[in-house]
Length: 417
Image 1 (cartoon, helix red, strand yellow):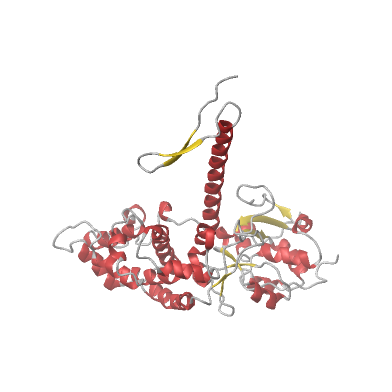
Image 2 (cartoon, one colour; image 1 turned 120 degrees about the vertical axis):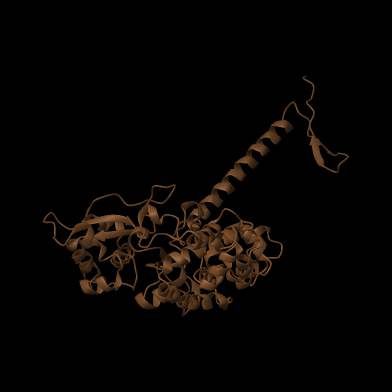
């Protein structure tokens, strides 16, 4: 095989490892067959809980010589790869500009540590662009996951997200929920307002996402909640059925996007900051923030849930309360001008503590799988105990109902022969 004999064009925002896999497949080869072309500085990140193959969200950084090898394999100029692959410029900081005479070098990394979260690109768009039907992984933040052309949600890297039948990652069709597409377009205006106010738009979205993801977990116990269940059933194609917990984990980010954008806009609104200040007593008195505040009431109105205010305000501690606390603290005890380091600690409204960060979709699915496995183990032990009781030396069991209406089965040991 002569490198470069077949052209493999990169997609904008594609990971280098995704391009390498596609280029190898064009020659009928596996990634393991082409990886020895580079000298590797470390081992690839593996699937959590397994040891087989690199993780889907793995990324590869090449030195200058390694970049030339990839360009020859793909049959495209290096400058094209430099424009298409977000990870391309990170290699210079890692390896330097000099080329090692020992040969091309490469290093494994997690994509999230290089250029952000990785998503499975829309298969229809990828097939139209590449001429082949296959998985393409791209760097895509959560606020850009709706394919504008086909109205499909582009999910996280397929790590444990196979569909109910095990036939690969699911495709969430959001065409029946136009509010999700509108929220993605509306985010651009919110991001501009955040940047105009001196805030990092990504951190604003992360804070809003943490707030709404916490509501998503609590919504199972909200009697008045009807928006998210209906939206989830439409996104999954009619009904979540018996796998409601699985679909809730997979569809969380898509279903909650409109509320996340609405909350993000509220968090950077100076008018709503004044409501937080007033709820805390303002300059005249000090009052604890509580469920009857006007700020949380306004949040409920913005997400079309006027009954949500007391529920959201009573959820303490949480990321939302951290944000409200910083707003009050900044007004009541302003930091010194130009403060940084320890002096500025506690004055960042969009600092998201680790415990408030919502789990990824893959982590949620692994947790759900663990719960299902534990439930099966308990059921198996109960069945084994039942069979032991009904075996030799025990009666088959007599059903009964006690005076409180509870049902049970009585087992009696047979007398020894």
